[in-house]
Image (cartoon, rainbow, N blue to C red; front, side, top):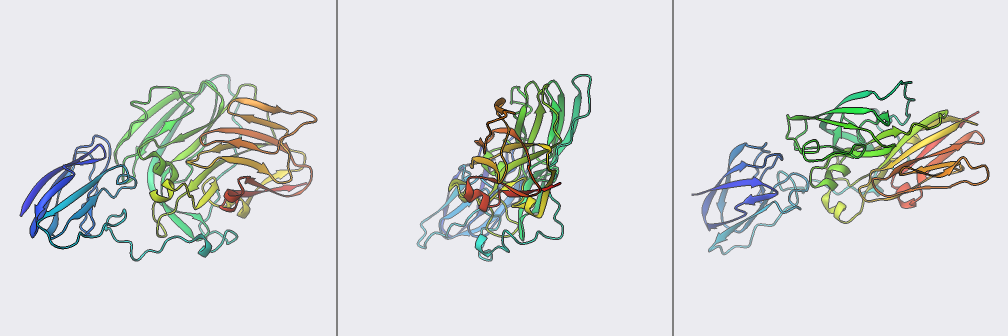
Length: 411
């Protein structure tokens, strides 16, 4: 028997290469010495440890080593960032054990890949528990000056429906993807408590504030919390998101949201909406987590407004003929730009990244609001007659992937 002590930290196992005489039983005593992140260690032969919080240890009996064997951290993205281990069977005469894809048991043989062509269909009805994400942005109450706004954001793992008949285990703020919309004015102070009740480390980064990221944006382990305080000094629709690495996985798996900070001179309108565009890279089975290979290939399965494919086809957003309607749009990415368009409508106002591109001109208009990932703005329009007006990303492949909805306009 051979016993080896291993440390897990900084996306590495130390040692990451262990030589074992063929026919020897290997025992690994692993300690997570990372100050912030949860890690585990699994092997291609199906042996798996448990998830270890910072400071925790366990003993893993890897079994009798007869051939070279690969190990890795199964937390999404950690393997791709270099958290792997190689067991070398010295003197072995048999072929190496085959490597497996990410997963606690190293075996996905019972899971078939998501095939969107086999989905119930983008026109299928959502499941019985479907509740549309609230797109309406309520007016701010009158105020004599800046106010303090307090909110608690709790990180959790939640298996949620993301399209009719399709679920994914998302990492969420307050149980939704995107997280709740924060809303205020320039000068308001936001006091945010982040609680981590998920299965791995998470964090939060508010673009709406300007401050050194070292402490407030740090990753916290499960069971920990922090307080993040910032003052909104500039208007806009700002992104917030988890900044724990790999950031692509944490954002794409649901950890993002919007902060709307109104400029002092923003005219009142009849109604306002918020639409946050995001992407899903579906795991290899229903209820799975984000697929890092699809992220690397820049190939999302779904592109959505407010976290569910085509949800506002099933629950159209109301408006009335002659009303001035404002639509705040944020592109949360991680990869796809958006070209926001209302079919049958023309924008009389376009405001992007802090500047008016068009402001209630009598004889000019705009057809789209173009945004790169992490950019935002708003458009305004008046619907001329009753009917159903689709809104889409005019990157049409993304509209077909779920970035589509309807305004239901009445007289």
